[in-house]
Length: 68
Image (cartoon, rainbow, N blue to C red; front, top):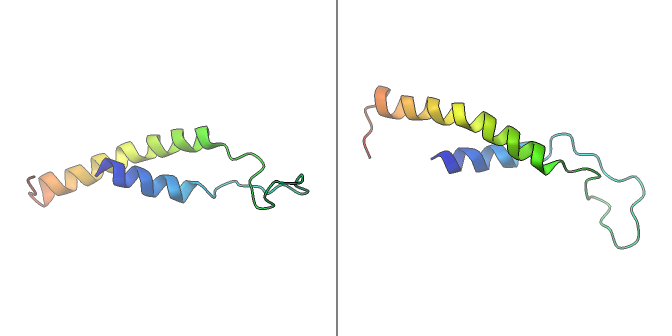
């Protein structure tokens, strides 16, 4: 479940703060981001998904009495 939460959050954060290149060089895609900042997005995804996973775990195990 943690992986599902992490992947969904990562794809939600990918377009945040993306700026396109004004004049791309020959051979470069015009829609490619200037600075994708993937490392920063990976860190934020991990930091946000940990408490969300904890909340989901609590709700499933203790509130809904779900057992694997």
